[in-house]
Image 1 (tube, rainbow, N blue to C red):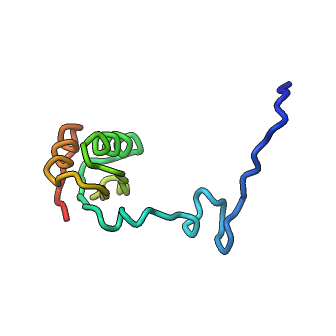
Image 2: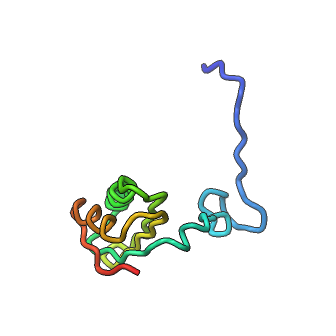
Image 3: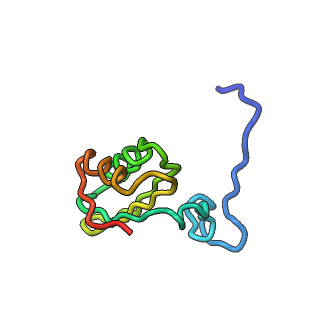
Length: 105
């Protein structure tokens, strides 16, 4: 049996939300810088591994502070990038990872 005495209690719900605090829609917050970043429409993503690959490729670009993918399996997913990286550099990183960028805005 483990002799660990210190435990961390995690909240099961956030105030004024439903569900646990880690997956409740009311508990999610994103840094304001994501709103000001570039958005890219991506095609060819089918799973969480695709998301991880794209986010990892985008964050390796100089000037990228964060990269988040909203997956739409079989459809057009969205990559949001915050930072000072050029649109072309992020596009090159995504295509270099084997995915296609449909548009950027």
